[in-house]
Image (cartoon, rainbow, N blue to C red; front, side):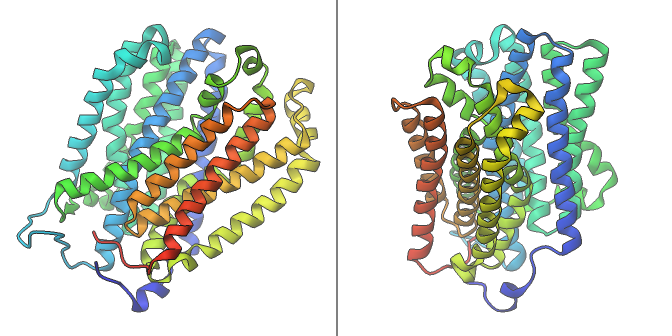
Length: 428
């Protein structure tokens, strides 16, 4: 490995105008997602909407898994850009291969595995239309892998304007397709296909962006198996992350009596609302953070400090607001049936901040080429959260403790590892 010092550690990862574009992309992505969730119940009946929401969760869980591909490509391209000397990591005669050939090979393999394994989980998760929806998921897997790779390359090259356009177009294209299908002939399978087809937005954006088209020529200068191994480690982390961020309602349901779960809509909605102010922008800015960590890796944990302090500040203010204003706001927005205790809202706000820190420390581990540490932290966090959910406690207490204890232990694992050794550059 080569330590990259000097002026590179003092350069800004993203300019103010670029940060604003990423922020706008984050807002557009969040708004488009919420509009889809708002629109679909107006087209489908309650039972069909439940099936669509199951597919929606499965779709974004899949996208979360593929986030590991984006993270590793971002790390690779950032390091390769900072030190353009070929990184052979083995044979000096290793020839480069087209990156997208590898990307499509990996995603195609995953799509086949999804189809072959679907008989084990498809009917239970996706309902009576499971076979058609599984095929849609397989297609979305391949399409989104291209989106994820492009996002990783653009971030690694610090082309934040192009990255923002790609991210915003994906969510907005999904919303447009869902609206069109819903207005013309709404059905569960049709709306699901429209939601998945949003992952093809890159094909349209690339027509108008020379830099996006140039990204398709990105070479891979390391052994394919080494790259695939690192993608696997990163995908374990993003899978565990997606399980906590997207799949927590599923974990809560399988560990909760049916009558209690059916009465828990206010709690689940509170979890969503307290996470959104931190996790929605972080989902977009995570690429910026990882690029920052790679660029400033000689600083070690000090590179994380300003971001961590900002999150702590937001959490403190947010928890106080949630405690004193949250219950009133919940009733105002959703009615008297949606009252949630002040301590629950404050606790969920703090838990959202801890989850954000876990996302950042995991990203820093990947940026510093410590994929196994990132995976370990996320897996332990998911396991502990699930264990807390099976404790014989009040439903609200279980949820808050689960969302706090698991991610907090994951943060401890990440930071202990990062603080015990000298920071070095990530090899490509």
